[in-house]
Image (cartoon, rainbow, N blue to C red):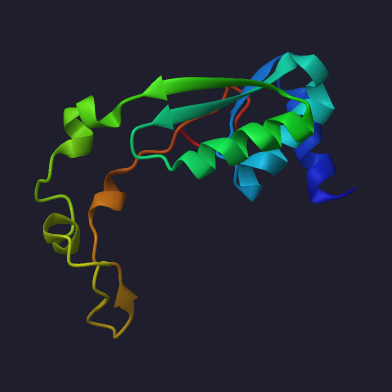
Length: 136
């Protein structure tokens, strides 16, 4: 059994209907295809059309959905109206604050490289469904 078959099987075992996020990239396209294969017309893909999304990415997501044959909903979202998105506080790395480029790499006391941005450490895991094996 391939990884794709296991993924499609996961959809089959965890519900009669599903919605998947489709960015138009390879990873989300594979997930959408597995959902469509497992659930047929009970699978839907959703793409967020947000203000900072390149038109090319949205066009690619639409094309992928059409090729897969999955129902596709595009929702509009203006992340620039979200104060948490636009705030530029101490949790963002300095290069992001001043636009100087990618976050610098630092060395820890043990000589290992560490990321220069603490913002990603705040992320909390999410659950796709009650059958999701990941911890909440």
